[in-house]
Length: 311
Image (tube, rainbow, N blue to C red):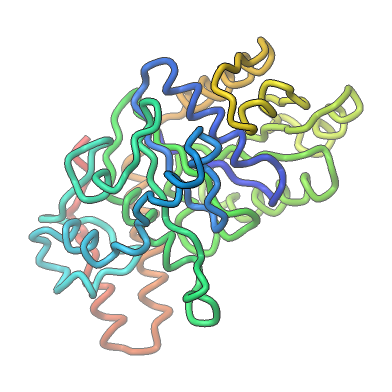
């Protein structure tokens, strides 16, 4: 299952993503974590020190070689440079398996049974000449070409706000956990996300965070209704993890919330045909936005109408 953590900045999105990843890995489940946030903090949240975290190779800086590997022998793609972030797989493309022997997972850092991938930070060299979507393009290509099996999990910590909807990336997930504080801004992001996702069948479950009392809980229920899956309060154990301690035991309520989240993920039905169709839809949108007719035609030709995922 492909899972995203989204929400406004400061909501605790990265912290909850790291807790969920740790929860899965502690049960011996195969899990890959992706730091796709413009602020790269997931590695530290998973327990790496800042020095090791800074040395994780950035997917966004290896795009040419990653594209060339994915392209494989696909005759519809002339070169790696012809691939864009939305390019779907076709006959001859190389597909990915979770934790496989491929250039993507070779860039991962193993952290307590988790394969951690990182898009890379937004650097000074990017200012004024680039946007972060160029870096998250590696994530979109990874998810487009990944054939994940039962009991396998990919958990992405996405950039804050609505940037996840700037391309078709939001349709690449089986479930999006929206981390919401019991505030007007917190529920405002929820309304924005559900409005964007409404026509695409993207499942959103709200996880309340920093819930202090019954009034906070009532506020969330009043504004997000049945989409509220579970919630966490102010936690001494979570604060200890954020301080770098490794001898921390979560409280029963926190473990129960994480169990509910896993159950919600496991209950999702995998629809590979819709996954393929939505990938093609957003690739064609991308192609038809180009002003150069030759480039538009080249990108449209990349769609292989006969391709189906081998599941």
